Each structure stands twice: as structure tokens, then as C-alpha cells.
Length: 234
Picture 1 (tube, helix red, strand yellow):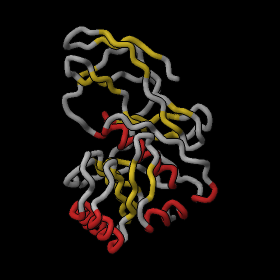
Picture 2 (tube, rainbow, N blue to C red):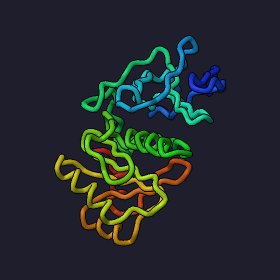
Picture 3 (tube, helix red, strand yellow):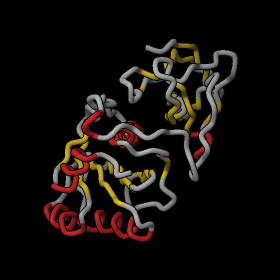
Picture 4 (cartoon, rainbow, N blue to C red):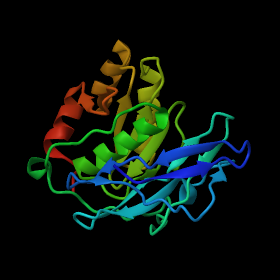
């Protein structure tokens, strides 16, 4: 578990005890951004790629990956960006520091990230995409009607944390966006899929996964099962 530090909200003065969440590296070791107790937290008023993500190096294998910048929600409603030390910023939407993973049949078992918030769902999917062998994970340039888009070399992924099953239109919008970028597409939903959405995905070749609260994606159609078996295409 990462070391905790006191974080005082600049808006209301309330002091919190905070420890950065740890995420699973591809080697299996937990990785947590080191906190900077000598710097003050800053309220989150708007979001940019450079501020939302940091690059952290695994102490076990030396792999550098992008992880969400630590944040804390104060009871007054302010979201605080907790300062970190000894990490670098990602390269931004046009690039990243991730590295390609081994082929699917040579990987260790996936280590899930528990989902408590929509942000956790995005983190879990980003980790899963890395496990599948995709690199340069970043936020997608084009927004979808619902959820959050993630992109990597060769794939466009949609993370839908809503409480309603994904519709046929949701699947079609993702597929159309992926077609304009000549890339594969994968949909991750917490609430599952309407029957017509599954049928449409099968016809379009869209991989469908359901996320449970443990953060473990489960394939629900043939395209997704094939993706798990083969991993990312070179």
C-alpha cells in the first residue's frame, strides 16, 4: 500500500488523510504514484490530458506507464489534484510511454482494478488494454454519445459506466468513429447490452465486454472472445 499524507482542502480547510491508489503493472507488481507532501493540492476546475495523467515507473520491472493523476474529493464538493513527486507527464494525446506487451498466450493473468467510480472503470479498461498488448493508451480524440473513449495503436475503445444497457446506436456510433480512423473497436459496458446491440455488434465485428465491479472484463460475443485469445495485432 502506498504511503499516506495529510491533504488540506484550500476551499474549506478540511484535512484529509490520503494514500494514492495502486494499479497493477503488466509484471503484476502494484504501482502507485509517489506523493509530494511538500506541495499543496490544487482544485480541479477543468481537465486536460497533461494534468489528468502522469507517467510512473514500476519499481519492480522498470516499465513506465501512464496512470491517472491522484485526486481526492472533499466533502465540500471540491475535487483536489494531489501533488506527486518524481514522475513525468505523458506525451499527450498524440503519443505515450507505454510499451507493447507479449502475445496473448505468453501473458500472466490479468489483475483487475476494483470499480467504485466511473473513473475507476476507465482505469480498469486502460489496464486491460495494456494486458491485451495495446500500447500508447490515451483518451480518444472524438467523443461518443456516452461514456469515455480510449484509443491506442490499432484500437478504439468505449468505456460506458452508465446504469442502462448499451444500445444498438451506441455500438454503431463507436463503429462509425473507428471506421473513419481505420481501426478496430471494443466496447466495455457496466450494465451490459440490449439484445439488438449484441446483434448489431456481431454484424459489424465489434468486440463487446461486460465490466463487473471487480474490474474484470468478460467477453460476451465472438469478436471479444477472439480478441482475448489473440491479443493485440502487431
